[in-house]
Amino acid sequence: MRNEMETLEQIDRYLDRTLTLDEAVGLEQNLQTDAELQSLFERVTVVRDAVRSSALRSRVRNLHMQLIEEIKQQDEAANDKPDYTKVRPLRYAQSLRWGARVAASGLLLLAGYGSYKYGSTNIDSYYSDKFMAYQLPNNRGEAEEVLTSLDALYRSGNFAGVVQRFAGLSAPTAHDQFLTGMAHMQQQQYKEAIDRFTALRLSNELKSETLFEQETDYYLALAFLGSGRVGDAYPLFEKINKTPRHMYHQNVTDEDLWKLGLLRWKSN
Image (cartoon, rainbow, N blue to C red; front, top):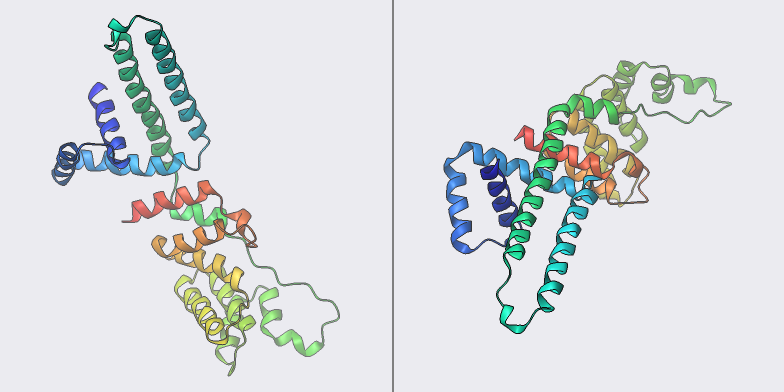
């Protein structure tokens, strides 16, 4: 346990760039040949990301505040003594070692949390948690001929019919593109959904429009996720998370981003 704590502390200091040059070079060399150290390094990296978005952050902060308070008390006690006691007392050195143990223990706590999340997070569960069927507005008084449109087919759940109907359109609108993409999503045809949403985004760019822009952000990200392309999904989810006014902002929390980070790490 002692060696693991020391290794965790070294990795933590390396990521904070507080190691000496020789220590940093030594760690990097060991990472090239030690698979177990590589795994620990990757886990600590992921866990540090969790600290920025997890409630565990406050627990670690409290541990560090406890350390700071103890050191402050040691300093005050030392300053009350005559000048010949300039050398730091043994208890001060012990408190610093205790602080290192606190930091390492905090990382161990977070590593355990990260391991749990790592084991319980997978693409299928994340996708199922985030996917919600797109609902068309229920307009009353529709004309009879509209019942053969993409809207009517989609609303009736005939998603294959939507795709077939779209293939016969000579000039599909942005609405047609998006609805057909959603029909593919409902059939778990993620590659085809990506094609439709991507075509809609390109059309918007060429026309300087934003039709279905936010809807496409969310469902294109899910389509990437469904096809296993976590690296492509992550920037879109991050954009939604960082944009408070995005219509899907509430669907992508900081912890969701951390889970995506885990998935991205697992898929590499």
